[in-house]
Amino acid sequence: MASAPTTDVSDRTNLSIDRSAAASRPVTAVDRRLAAAVQRTIADGPVRLELWDGRRADGAPDRAAGDLLVGDRRALIGLAVNANLYFGEAYIAGRIRIRGSLTEVILALSRSSAANPSRWERATAFVARANDVTAARRNVEHHYDLGNDFYSLWLDPDMVYTCAYYADEAMSLDEAQKAKLDLVCRKLQLRPDETVVEAGCGWGALALHMAREYGVRVRAFNLSGEQLRWARARARREGLDSRVEFIEDDYRNVAGQCDAFVSVGMLEHVGRRSYAALADVLRRTVKRSGGRGLLHFIGRDVPRPLNPWIRRRIFPGAYVPALAEVARDVVAPADMSVVDVENLRLHYARTLAHWSERFAAARERVRAQSGEEFCRTWELYLAGSEAAFRTGWMQLFQVVFAPRESTPPFFTRAPLYSGRGARQ
Image (cartoon, rainbow, N blue to C red; front, top):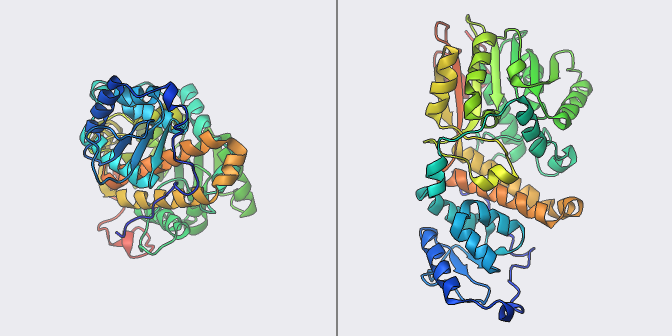
């Protein structure tokens, strides 16, 4: 895959640290030792650390992807104590700035972090908080109810906020998102008048695509009132509201049976302690004869907690599972068999690069509405996510499953990539 475009913030943000107050807060020998220790932790990057007096940390490389400009002692201590959390906090507050491409610097830091998990990560790798219905709704509101106007500034016209599928590397984001919707439908081998349950439907693009292009009937569940208002209005405009029912409810309350179950981008919000509940939903809703399902989710190669800054600022309550955890704790307890697994990691890296480009184009409008700190939060989130997928720290899995005794939805993978094909 060709290299993804990057976001460079150097021409729109003043990246210099104010040196005028340096005399009132001089760099001490202790500061220098602390800076050298932090520099050693990012040596694999490589990224140079520069203190507020303008001098680089001892051990800083001559050539680097960019520079971290540390504006004060508090920011330096945060990097030393828990960089995975306090780097982001200091960056959005403007106490740490970046000289060079934000994306490339974060990419370099991600390589170092991925190779060297912190003691905090190792200690909390198997700690998880339960996401009950109340917590799930609160978490959804934190992220997805920021306003449809905000997301429409930088998502594609269908408002698809999950990994696109670049069947052709020359595809635009809009084309790749449509290709992803159809890839999901082909993997499910949908037939007219079948029933589909979608858990976590976002702004409704997949549900509407399934109904419009494949003639199925869909019940789509979501806890975001903002997203559902958008989805229902679009269904009415397109005359699909008789085939798609958008339901404001939690996935745990799905009732009845369906021919196909699909979840795109929701599993990350379920939480490890709620996998049994999801497995129960699959076991009682997917028809034992001819039923099948698909889980599309951000994953890991090995269990590891989500970055604490991302959990605090972006996705509270989220947990990104290892593929083995999903097979063991979700699919198997539902009495299902894994039929197919595909990893679209680099597709998500490209998707995020395109989102960053669009966000950059809309930045002034976002800043006018929500402020500079909000903009810096989202720039860092998008750049950090792209870096995680480019380095392999994160994966993007699509898992097709079916009841153990049922015939799988496809005999070979040929129908998945040779255009639309009905189940035989």
